[in-house]
Length: 355
Image (cartoon, rainbow, N blue to C red; front, side, top):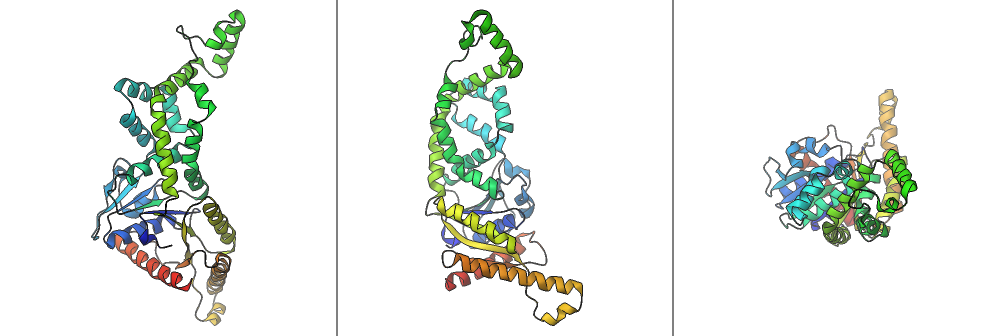
């Protein structure tokens, strides 16, 4: 239940709730406590870059975050294409195979445009950093809910594709030595008409590039499969803890419960649920009559605290619910992030005691 006791902490939640800021704060708190810590993100918005003050070089290599922390703090931003290219460089059996893949037009399109490539490459990147053993703790900031679920399902989809009949079909030789489709080359005029039709609709050059890509990529399949299985197990390991971040308000309760249920039913280790940016209750309700602004603040405070209470009742003792108040300013430097980490730690300790 406590992120400080796990080597991999995955921060999930819907968009616009301060998830990236809390992930950064947890990483800063971990480094301040003396653990060498890596915080990484594959959220396309790259808000982590601005939060920690690192440049785009963090998408090329691990970047040390400047600041006075007892343990080292590193940041990493995911560049899906760079990661994919790096995998080809690292695992191609020889230089010829590497060049065939990297210079293939189908690969160029696949790595830039195929739905799910970001999630697949995030899985590979997580495998890479987790297996170095260089970090006492890794904090992973994920995109909003739907894309985070896509990432969590990516290892199983990779294995499913690599074990599928579709891949076996893709690996068969489609073209003969003259560059003609084998399926149509023996059909005379009818075959040529079919080829012309396919050329107009799809483009035979694209099909040739696709066939060549799958054959050149074949020696790498088993490695992709093995790494995907390892990430699948890592995500469900006792060393991994998920932290679910949500916002206040009535509409958030159902979404939070849905996401929590999806995680637990899939076998992930869900720890605290953090309700961020909760409006305070006004100490003097009579002040609400002073102005429309005070009436609005009073209503927001009552709404938020009612939603937090409802969520606590519904969750029960299965997960600690931690309430973080709306701060005057969003943390933007290590000092304010460390203060947020200390607040989160204090409130988590209290929530754990009350379970």
